[in-house]
Image (cartoon, rainbow, N blue to C red):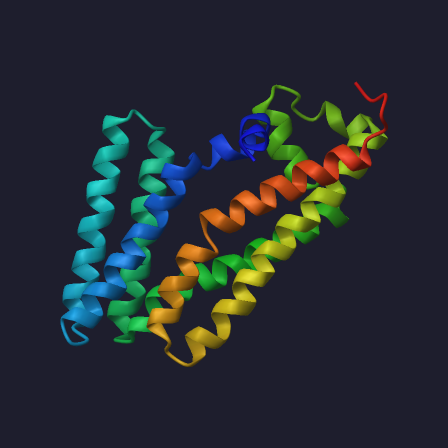
Length: 204
């Protein structure tokens, strides 16, 4: 697994293990605070925002990319605004649910349009840019591997939808953790395996 992480630039682009844990922590803080305070939504939202702000500060100290810092904080802030406006704690997870549905559609559309997003991301990450599109083997490999990412977003949405509809806050919190970094690692490993299997043995 460690070789897969080092060989695949997606692991670093998404912030690695620390970035994935950072993205899940505000949700965990939100759920725990909500339960401990006797379903006090305001206090739980404030706790999640404070956790996100602390993590953002830590990221700045680590000199991470500003877009990653702002993106993480903005995602939590938007989720908090949605839940605050509706008054429903489960709506804190609604933006991420909709984002997973949209991501699944976008990844699928990119494959059908012959611009598989995995090729786009990896191509720019390793300096290949879009030259991989002139290689039929790479086009096929990236297209096949991109379906894994599309399906992973669809799985997240499929798991979270019934939890959201039943206001299962604990389940949503657990899902955020289990379908976060552990699933990403599995998807990266599967993508790497599919790409290697799809390319001819003598491919450069």
